[in-house]
Length: 303
Image 1 (cartoon, helix red, strand yellow):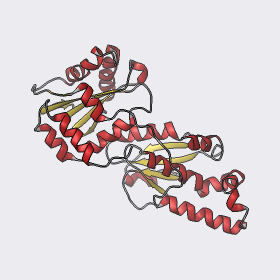
Image 2 (image 1 turned 45 degrees about the horizontal axis):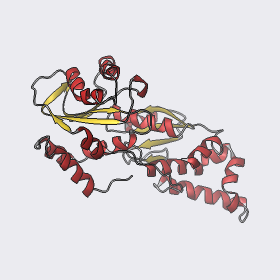
Image 3 (image 1 turned 90 degrees about the horizontal axis):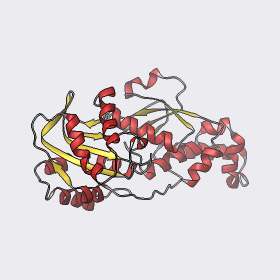
Image 4 (image 1 turned 90 degrees about the vertical axis):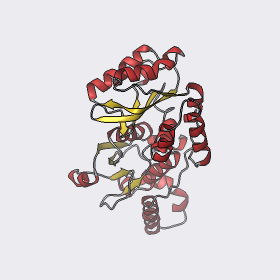
């Protein structure tokens, strides 16, 4: 991230990139992805999160950040729904080598390529720049961004357990209250945070529903978070969230905009493997954590 910061302050500071987000996984995932882009890349301006077929409705698009592969007249940077360090490296590399940055700020760009520029003429330098740009567009990266791993899902579930609630017709507000109670009791969050999570859903609808089986209740760090935490409640008989009927309710509390990202990636990894969710539904509170532990032990996951 130190290198990324130098990009923000140096090479790319005179160029803002207009980008679109294409993420078919839902509104919540798109919003999370946009939040990460805003956090890590101040030189990128996200115009909108759109379906593939609406991309051509936008003008002045420099490139597209997408979670699915497709053909486009714009450069496409392919990433995961929750950015991995490799994804951030790829975006930073793309920005560094982009012809847009080169045309706008040739002097600063030549500083990055100064070592090469000492040994080649301008025509060769342009060719090198363009070939690097094409490499970035194929998913390669020049930079590597390290990330400190914080507590993951397994550690959270070992601390707070996995609850099962077979109550039929439970109100989603009560479900959030119940799922949050251990975090309030252990002083990870305040009662005000629970109230805010509920108020946000009342104001904006069931935006916390990630897919047809899962919701992640959350609010802002300033609403009453003291420590990073995650709980999971499983509803074998379903829990109604408006037009959705989910089976897994997570309550996420994060003290800042970064610490929870690793947890979110692991949640995404879970819902991309529905057989594990099915196995959890058939389990109980005594062996559910063991199932999750074994899953992440046997499935490679980027730190």
